[in-house]
Amino acid sequence: MRIEILYSPSNNIKEAYSHFANQLEQINFEPNFLLLFLTEKVWKNYRVFIELLKKRFPNTKMLGCTVGGYLVRDEVWTRGVATLLGEFDGKVDVFWVKDKTATRAAERLGEKIGKGWDTILLMFPAFYFPGKFQFLRAFINDRRYYRAFKNKKSLEEKEKVLTDYSKYLESKFIFPINKILKTLAEKTGKKAPIIGMNLVPLEAQSYTPLILANYENAGRCAAALCFKGKVNTIFHDIFPERGKSYEETLEVVKGFFSVIEEVRVIKSGVTLGEINEMKPVDFLKMKVLGFKDVRQDEFLKRLENGKLLMETPYGVNFVSERTFGSIYLGLIAYPVNLYPSLFDFNGFYNSALFVGETFRGGIKAFGKIFEKKRFNGFDFFILDHSAVMSFGGDIHRLLDIIREKSKSYFGVLSSYPSVYLPNPDRRYISEIDDGICANLTGTSVILEFI
Image (cartoon, rainbow, N blue to C red; front, top):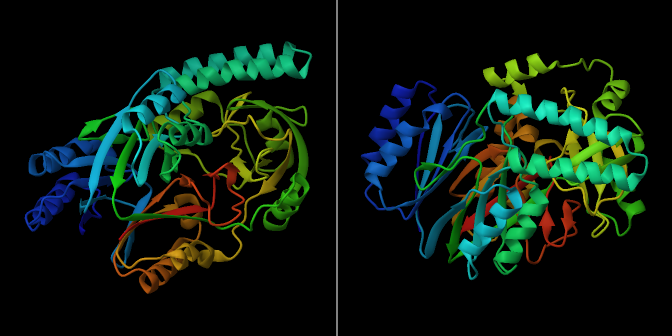
């Protein structure tokens, strides 16, 4: 196994290109896979980098995406571009699929991948941000479905409206994290770990997140880099283990988060209709002073300028009926009546906890994943960008932990990675379905190349 990292921390495209070209001249091997990561200020110029890499390595399997930053050597960067070139001692391949719905894309991707792999690295947009005209249609549909929702009397009728609206959201915007992982795991035989890079930008703009597959802009798709050989997948979340009942898990959540209130919800599919008989955004503004209305025109302006913030310290924790695991959904005061979710609500209780997000244990809580390492090869890791970046300058303390446990590494800051694990090593609170670990905060993954 041989790995080389090329990177430039410059947002100046000519300068970054020159750095890349000069570093490429020093490469004296032919990688059989590469990963390309682009940060906020450079992703629109992705073509210059994929053309450079394709010219040099035309037959190399390639996957890439936008990220919040990357960690290389003794440095942490939130600007520029980086690529990992790998000569893997085994079989490696890239597959990708676009389809009208997220579920169908996952099904077709699983059929393409097939069985017999040892690890699958999956990229998909948990939420895809199209252009403003698509959002204008979405706002109209939001109002139309909300009127239908309010006019229904029974819970079953209200849930039916939310289910129908969810189908629209899944066709245009959302790849539900738990649903995608479950579908892909079933299609690929449920024996290979799946690492989910369920992408959501820290600050969104139109046509993000970007996903690249085999030197093409794959658009709103699901794409996978598959390995057959000596690899090991490690998952970690920063939370205590889940309880053995709904009540026990509630107590675990109350002990970790700043709990504000236990609430009743109406939900279905990927849509949250009500919290305590109120619109979710209205409930948020009632409970937390200082949240101002973001008008539709302001939302679109922020989207156009790449300043649409996607992080929030307030949200709702839901408990799984199947595993008693728990998942967090952040709430932002954006101009919607029906609130979209990045995971499928089906199989969760209709009572939940409105919470304030905290990170107990500090940077060391995120560093604990490196204590779970089993091998001394090369480590590629993915850390939750929102959680890690909240520590500001203290993030360099994380590098001290990494250097102590890993002799060779490269990592990216991305949105709360998820996994499917055939045999989870502990009772993760993030395990919200059998073997499926997902949370919208506080997760990390390592892929060890042995």
